[in-house]
Every structure is written in structure tokens, then in C-alpha cells.
Amino acid sequence: MRRSLLAVFFLGLAIALAWDFSGFWEQYLYYRTAASSGREQVSDPSEPGEVIVVLTGDAGRIPRALELLRARPQSRLLISGAGKGANLTELLNQQGNSMVDLGQVWNRISVESSSASTVENAYFSGKEWNDSPPSRIILVTSDYHMGRSLAIFQKAFPGMPIFPYAVSSPVPASSAGFLWKLGSEYWKSTAYRLGRLFGL
Image 1 (tube, rainbow, N blue to C red):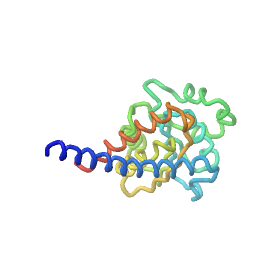
Image 2: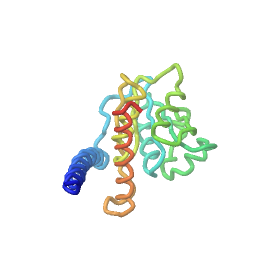
Image 3: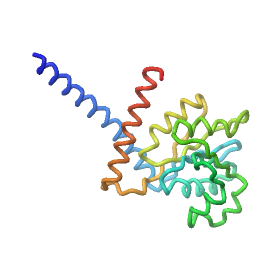
Image 4: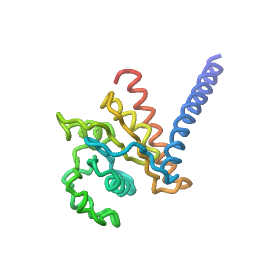
């Protein structure tokens, strides 16, 4: 009897996890398609008070955010999670061709170097603008990372318009490294959602 109950429990657990992962996978595919399609992900024109927040991590995030900044003349860019002691010059010197014509937008870029997690990205981003919150946020991060990042920023800044801007992961989707990244992000996402469910 006990074995039967355990078998039913683990079967139910496996089905629940499979169903939950399918939702995560569908969300990832949505942002992956948005990132790789070449279409503009934010159709609204640039407006005063708009802040582009790019979360450091994968190599393609900052170059894409710089392209977005050039295309949106009223935006400011916050690079969040640059690491202790990082300064803007050192950080941008690592961005290759993205440095072209950087002088045109240099004064609209700032760096936040205190955060070490996505939750801290949101917290310390808020500290950067203090009593002058932006009119809206354009959130730039990798396709697989966007779902949880967007949820965290929406919780941190309730009522503020936040537009997701996904960037294709530089790791091939068929590689073991990418599967590890995706699996890791799924468990982080699950832990975050459970934490919110239980008020943590």
C-alpha cells in the first residue's frame, strides 16, 4: 500500500513538474522568437524619463542595449550588475564594435555595480534613480532570463510600465552548456515563484 501511494505521489509530482516546465519553455520560446526575429520589440517612440536597464551576463546584452540607446534619443541607459569596482570606461571597452560613435551617448549611460543577483538588480536600479523614478523601463536581458527578470522588476516597481527587450543567448540552443543554463534558470524561476506564493 505504501509503495502504491509513493508511486502515485511521484507520478503526480513528475506530471506537475512536466506541466510547469512546459509553461517555462513556452515563455522562453516566445522571447527567443522576439529576440531572433529582427523586429523591433518596443514600438512606442522614445519619451523623456525613459530608462533602458540592461542586466549584465551574456555577451550580447550590453551591445544590444547600446544600439537601443542610439535609436532612442530621449532614453538613458543603466548597466546593472557590472561588478564591484567596475567603471564605465573599462566596461564599454569590452564591447567591441559597439564602441563606434559612443561619444554621442556617453553622457546618457550610468553603471550600477552593487548587485549580484536579479533581485538585487531591481533593488539597486531603484536606488540609482532615488526620488526621480523613470516614466518607464525597457528591460534588456537574455531570452531565457527574461521571464523571471520581468516578474522581479514588475514586483519591485508596481504600476510602472516595463517593456521586455529580449536578446538571443550567445550559446547555441543545441549545446550542453545552454541546456545547463536553461535548467538552472528554470529552477531559479520555480524557486522565485514558490517564494512569492508563500510570501517570502
